[in-house]
Amino acid sequence: MVNQKQACLSGHDLVLAAVQKVIVDHESITVQINVSALSAFITEQLKISMPQAADETREIKIPYITRRAHRGSIIIEKDKNRGERDYLDLPPSDLRNLVRGLIWRDEHFGGMTLRDIAKREEFSEGYVGQCIFNSLNAL
Image (cartoon, rainbow, N blue to C red; front, top):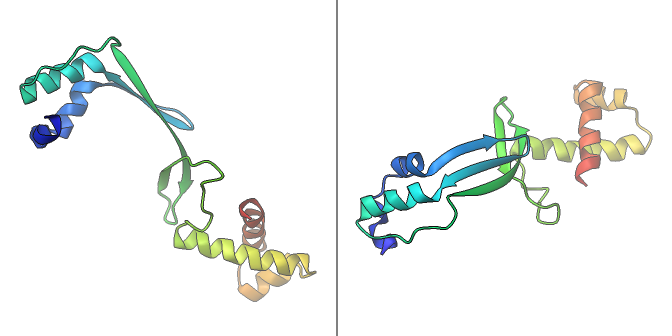
């Protein structure tokens, strides 16, 4: 019954009625939902009776990780377990830097200095070293 009538619900009003508090921590977002208010909103809007919940408040905790995009914005992604994470599922600029780092790492461990690699590629030594270091974390 709710599925058939859900188009009548305003998402904005639903969130305002149900969400008590949102806590943004360093590695997770916690959303506290007032179950009674949510039930009352659905009862009022859809004209159906909802059972009363025993708990007054429920929490939804969502872990996340942040990273910087190419142009400075911050991206919040769902925190995946290491086993599920695909290292090639990266933005184009990060993937390009990973490949550069892998190539430069092999050249550097083969005896080439960071200065020589940086001069050839026309990047700074620090950038070359950073790409190599990041490639060690990835693969």
